[in-house]
Image (cartoon, rainbow, N blue to C red; front, side, top):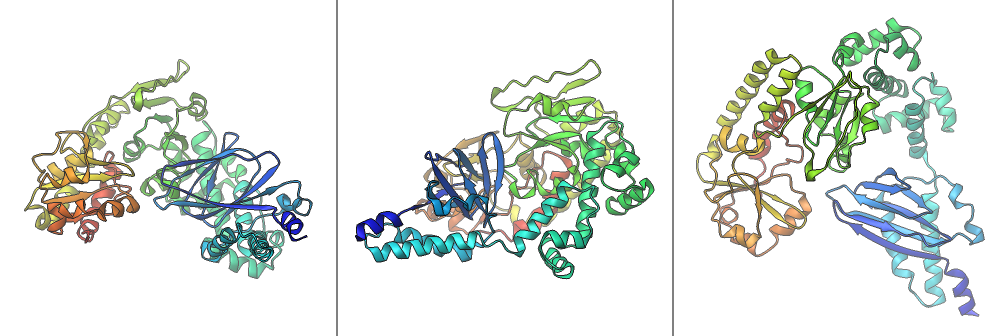
Length: 517
């Protein structure tokens, strides 16, 4: 009798998966099964049927077909899975229920307890297991106030031309106007009306950049404003310049087809590209771009540089000119253009300002280069003076600690290391490569007798794994407590804006970054 009860109770199966940064996990859905996935930590992307969806901590997703997910966070992507046969009658309706966001602090212990209980053989253990699973299901289907606000945000974003009133939005969220406004402001940081205006301005930017010849009147109508003069005043108030001035930035429509952020150079020359590359897995929290470029590129069509560029995506932005560099890994990229459109091929360069000068020459903006270079040069001199107490003694090396390797970088022919060793006064260790990098072990690093060590771009989990090893403690710089690990994830000095941003952060973050192991 008890065996029959156990058979009836055993509908569910639970599992937990952990994926490291950059790792991919495939999910093979057994025929006739339904999976419920909960994200306990980290960030990433879920891909199914060629479509990509962002994975966020605290969210749940139904999976009914084969798929895979990618981790894009320095923190492990931790995923809990609950599966059951879709023929179980009392669960057939679950797929129609909206899933609620729930904090990991509230959910992880419940998942872990359910996993611990699922292999229990006694009737008591199985009853406890079932109770744990139903508790999880009840929380993940407990659609709450925060979920209603999230849906409202998506509704506004998809319908910016609709003049929703607060009363209408509150009604859709099943809330009173006052409680809805308070909840919305707590979640978003601004009122529903302010958020709608922000979304309209962002949409207006995209319309002006992506639609050749569009008028301010057309833009105003498309974002739900009947008065183009009111739109112009609003745009200037929010952006700091009139729509006509904004549109002049893309008067000559330029697309960037490159795995480098050449848009940095264009923006410094007063030009916003109509299309430019982005890296969604490298910068998942800022729209696939370094945060210092994200705001400047609102309205630009973003091209995924982690994949082969698609010519149709490039041409949708109607470019007059394309700036193109050779692509990595020997990839061949053909871009078909009409006779009115031109492709400018830009070769790889070792100096950041060589790109600036060539692009400025192509666009007739050479007169702006000297001022940009002078500003950067003054900033470099200032930072060099501030760092002098740290750099005047000892020889340096720069490493990047990655998941399965350590890279020791050369002292020249790279914008970052030219900046450190030639502009900021760091003296390179004599055993560094001249250019590029070489792979080495911690033991090999210890034999180099490096006085001072700088760790760049490395994820914390990879650094701490290396730091805990016995070999790490044999490194001279470690013994002398001269290891520096600044927050450098966005340090990219290949363009004027990125270089300036790095320099502005460098001195203060560097001085506070000594790694005490």
